[in-house]
Structures are given as C-alpha cells and as structure tokens.
Image (cartoon, rainbow, N blue to C red):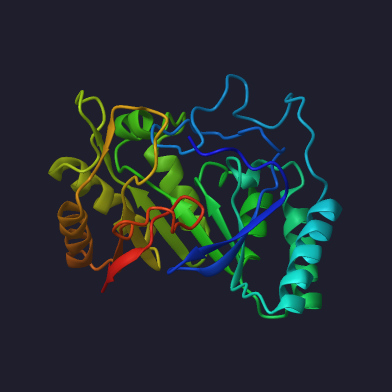
Amino acid sequence: MMPLQEGIVYGPVRSRRLGQSLGINILPGNVKLCTFNCSYCQYGWTRTGAQHPRGVGDVWPSPSSIAKAVGLRLRRALASGEAVHRLTLAGNGEPTLHPEFPEVVSRLRALRDAVQKGLPIAVLSNSSTLDRPEVVRALDRLDERYMKLDAGETALLRRVNAATMSVDQVVEGLRRLKDVVVQSMFVRDRLGRIDNAGDVAVAAWIGALARIQPLRVQVYSIDRAPAWPYLQAVPAHRLEEIARRARAAGIHADVFTAPAGNGSVMEHGSPVLSRSR
C-alpha cells in the first residue's frame, strides 16, 4: 500500500499528462476519508465510519492553512526554478468531502492569482458528491475536473467501488458539471468476482459516457498494490480495444499505462499516457 499523505502539500509529482503536478491533500493527515471503498485503491480500504465528514473526529485543515501551505511551497518552487505545471486537489480520499470545500477553492484561486496567475488548478474526484449544488459550483470554478466512472451498471459499480449510489445518480451528477474529463479504471480479479473489462460491461460503460458527453475519457488499469489483493491489471491491448470502442461511439478516449520498468512515474495514482488519439 502507498503511505497516506501526512501534510497538505506533496510533490510535485511527475506526469506526462499533467506535467509537474503539485498535490494538495485537503483531508486530515494520515487518515483516508472517502465515500467509496474502491477495490483498487492504492491507499487500502476506507476505514469503518470514514465515508462521510460529519461525525468524524479528525482535524480538517482550514481553508486559510491550505492556502498558506500551498503558497509557501509554490513560492519556493518559483524561487528555485522548480517547475510546477498544475495544482491538483487529490490526497487521502475524496477532496470534495472537506466541509468548507467551496471556500478552499476560493482561497486557492486567490492564492494562485497572486503568486502564479494562469497556473491551472485541477481536482481528482470520485464523482460521488455531485448532488450537492455548492460542490458543483465550486468544481466548476476549477480549471480542470478529472472525475471517476468505472462502470455503467450499478451492481458492477458496487463491486468495483463499493459505491452506495447508482450509476444513474453518478451520470446525472456528471451531466451537471462543465468540461468533464472522465477517468475509468479497468480491473479483473482471479476469483471472477470483479471484472469491468468484459464486452457487456464495456458496452454499459460506453452507454453511460454517451449520456455524459465528457470532453474525453482516460482509460487505464492498476500499477500499484491494490486494496483487494486478488485484483489483476487489464492488459494494454485490451485497454486499447476498450478505447477504440469508445471512439467508435464518438467519445475521445486516451489510454494510459505505466512506463516499462518505471512504475514510479505516476500522477496521484494514475498511470501515464502511452497512446492518444
């Protein structure tokens, strides 16, 4: 398992997709908080009772402390000539769970404009909180939204992600956002319990994408030890087949794989691009 982030800022993390991405963990340090409990999560399983922010006794970093930490790190990078191409909200789970997420976004935008105007601010989200209008408005104020959808059928979404919501709810939430990039992790396990890369599963997933109409979709598989130890990576040739089927349906699709012999070159848990059309 990957160790949890202890502080607010980490990296920059090198990525062929996002360049030098400065990670921002706005969740409590050393605690994974997430609405999902994904079988492939590199941080392991979500602990019992840690799927919602209210009632959790962990200390949330304040919007001002988040902006201060990011500002110090960004200024240090600028002073030393270190490249930072993006600020990316990710970290120990689902960033939109922060009780003051809209204010966090406002503070980061103001900080960015003061220190390095034009630097993109991105988010990696599991798409589970889009029923909250304040979250949707805040996400729309970011420059880039990388949102998760791993299945087009509810029962499979629950097996892959342990999601308590339906695919229809996820799809409707994503339709509310502007300029969405969908990220989709394809996995199988040797016990046959989890497989979202088969033909039927892929057809349902493409149907969901057709309803969302994202800017593009990013197709990838695992490259790090997952929470469910029986999971297996889907081969690159199958990922390409899945992407080709998405393209045939009019959806721009990129395939991401880990570079040979260098699995450490990652962006917040996402493999790097190997082929794009």
